[in-house]
Length: 69
Image 1 (cartoon, helix red, strand yellow):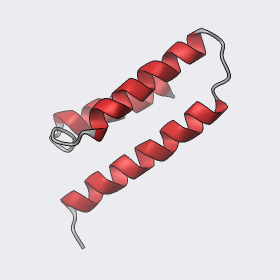
Image 2 (cartoon, rainbow, N blue to C red):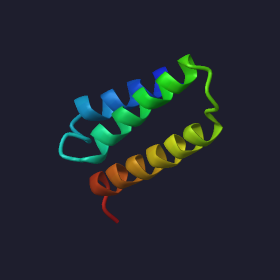
Image 3 (cartoon, one colour):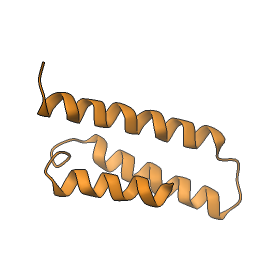
């Protein structure tokens, strides 16, 4: 799941959707932190939920910027 998250984030950046968005770096850091937690066998339920929420928000904002209503 984390590998997919990182892939989607990199894809958004490469397509130019995330270049100027400060949330990109925050999401990248959140993925790194979660990977560290997984490797350390720490509890990750809340961290995964927060990351999922942040990704949803990020991609909704990017989508809204690309396709304004």
